[in-house]
Length: 307
Image (cartoon, rainbow, N blue to C red; front, side, top):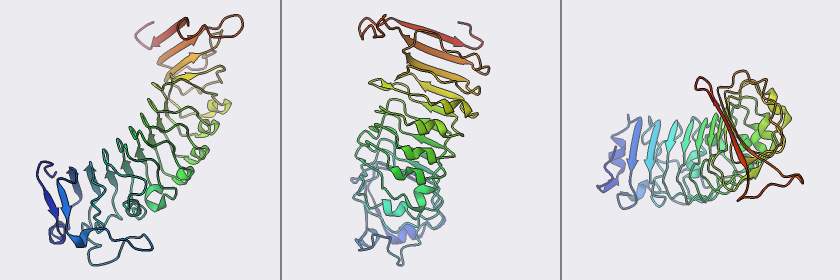
């Protein structure tokens, strides 16, 4: 790892001498790094990576971790096609960052960490080969990111998508195409709508939409009971008026607020180990008692711990 308190200048000769490097971890801002002219990005009409003598630098690099990456430092000549893990968290990259062109050729990229990139307002609409192969994507704490592109459905490989504490307000319907998605983390985000198509993803194991403010209304589709993989369902920030039959595979269930006057039938949840329900009781006219006078009842049961 390079020392973030020192100042470095990347040179062609210096990088060429690291031809066997597989892991590079850098942390620092523009105050710490610079690059000689022939390593910088140069505009081209086709907006693709130039092919020149420098294009094979760091040919064995598989893992690049560069927190606080300075977007004005455009090193265009790393050989990035075989990168597997890319961590650019805490960086000031934006939607017009030239580095997106690099990602489009990363045919083996599996992990992309863009957490805390608070200047990022949108993702590229055309993911290219790189984003299409991703298995883990973190956009957590990207506060300026308001939506996911519809093209996210073209990413066939994602196993985990983390948009926790981001500015994303809703999920596109195309999320149904993420057939391999197992974990969707949305806690603390700005989510106000969950599409019905989400419940159709058969490999989903975990959905976490807790700690979201303000509360939002959720319709849990009837098709959810067909999901034999779902183990964790946390919708503790959601208003739920009707609860569909839930899958028997559930181990953890957290729901609130349940605006129902009867206890839901959970008798089929024989694998349940942790249950956390919150009810918002209604008056005779079907209206809530209100924010200040709402009567809440918590029902918690932890397997092995009693009530």
